[in-house]
Structure formats: C-alpha cells, structure tokens
Length: 229
Image (cartoon, rainbow, N blue to C red; front, top):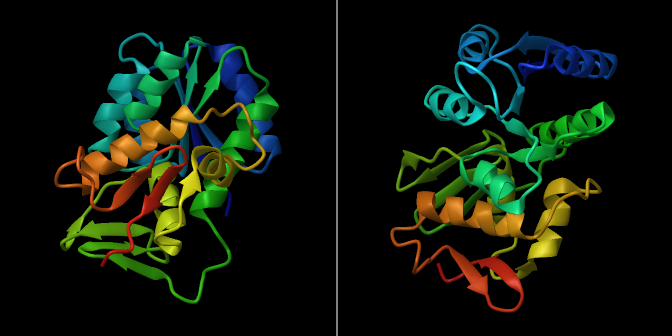
C-alpha cells in the first residue's frame, strides 16, 4: 500500500508540481493550501509524512506544527524561502525533521521524503531491539521511547539520533558523523542541525538539560550516550 504524503503550500502550482513528482515516485499525495485546511486533512488522512510550507495565510506552518504535534508525531519536512541559518535552526527547534530551502528541485523534495521515511521503515532490525540506559528505554521495533515508564514524544530525527547513540553507549560521535548517519548522502545539511536536535532531546529526557546524565557532550568531538549505568 502506498504511503501517504500531505503537501501543504499556498502556492498551488508548486504544490501540484510536488504532487506529480511524489506520485511518480509511488506515493499517494494529499494537498492542502493553508494551515487550517491541513489540520483537517491530517486528521482525516493520517499521512505518513508532511511537507509543510512555513509562510501561509490563515495559519502559518509553525502554528500548524504546534497544533498537529498535540495529536500525532508525524514526520515533517519544512519548506522555507528563508535561507538564513537562524531561520532553519528555528524550524528544527520547533520540531521539524528536515528542511528544504526555496527555490528547490522537486526531485530534492522526493529524495528527502524518501530519506526520512527510510529511517521510519527499516527492514533490518538488530538482534536486540530494546535499548536501556537507566530509566530511559528505547524500543526500536515499536518505535517508542519511555523515561521512567512515561512515553517521550520524539520526532523521527530525534528518535534516530538517540537510537544511533544508544546502540553504542560510551562511543563518541562527531557532529558530521551523526549528520551523515541521519541524512545519508543528502548533503545540504550542516553540523549545527545536530546541536539543535540534541538540545531538543535533552529538554525531553534530562532532569537538568544543563547537566545531562544521558547525552554527554564530548568537547572538541561531538556527543555520546553515557555508559555509566
């Protein structure tokens, strides 16, 4: 069964163009042209991934994402006309899994959609599918994370990063290495993306994000999952 992509963009010609490319890649596509319409579409269609424009009438992409995250944790790729790094970091900080800067090639959007979905639909599972560090438990097969028995809402990118580090506790990963594992050969990425995801994860799993006990900073290198459990 084809996976469903919700494309949200008030530029109708661009939305239709993305629809054509995504359908040619084998996806089922639903269109919405503002944030309010997208909320209803997301509730009805329950898409596997959302391609979301930031600047729209009625309700912008950030507000849509805030409201939608209350209901589901669908992976989101944001489209932005702002090339400034701070704006892109802001989008990631609000919970986006990836971003694409306008103008862009529709083929790039398809590639990024496929990359995010690959992280969610791995065909190969390790022999041990449940990873533990203290009260933190990551169940790869169920794609769920809990802390002291309570569910943690992680984005697809956050879950993938946490999984990478929990598979190898104590190993230091450079930002570039983590970015490569996260995005593969899609390289418009930049290393600060990792810092944003780590900051978001620490806010969710650390009692004191300024003094983390799970995700440790390795100065001059990157990050690692503590193995002192």
